[in-house]
Image (cartoon, rainbow, N blue to C red; front, side):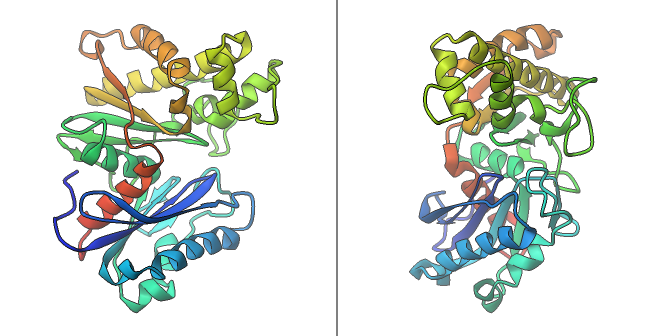
Length: 319
């Protein structure tokens, strides 16, 4: 992904996930301004989720920089449909074939300036950001993973981010890595997301007897105990890493990857995730051309979705 052109223009960016919805204005260097983070009411009706998006846009539109905004980019949990401008996030059940592009374009501040609205899946946005400014910089062929409440991914092939016609290329979270696994809300079984997401890690640890020392029952607390050697916590991360390794190896075999970038909240577990991931990749990535995959932690953290959404907006027609 090439950087947005050097100019005084700014790009509005919104990053919608199952846990939070973030917004910012992003300049041509990828620097964030006026960032806002709000909880995503993922279990509520779709109108409530849209209301949070509108609150984010209200905040951005109230800033002095809004008059310099050239386009709005939105990264959303997927799947997405670029043809129709809709989203159907697995972890936001109130949004099914939801016309997000049209609804964002109808926001008064966006409509008043007739701003172009560009949509991308959250994994594609992360890939765009990491390829521009982060751990995938300089890589011609890379897989960029977001491992958080869900699991998203984006592909860089032949030096460019490739979303595919529908916008879902590389949507690794919903490939089956356990053929007889649990049913997934997407309609399939044994999906990678159902094993490797932060939600799945915490659920598996709790089901096998892990209990946090405090109130935090999230994957973050499981990670802390895994690093301390708690056997159930270690096993939960090992299972997640095994599923990720299977998905990464399959993708690398399919498109001949060189680099893999892993970000999202679960990647913050550090050695608790990357240690067993390297071990399982040694087993699954067995063909000669798959050996030695360059696996790196993402560099942009929670800013990646916003930076990537801005990069997508900058590259869109009319920006």
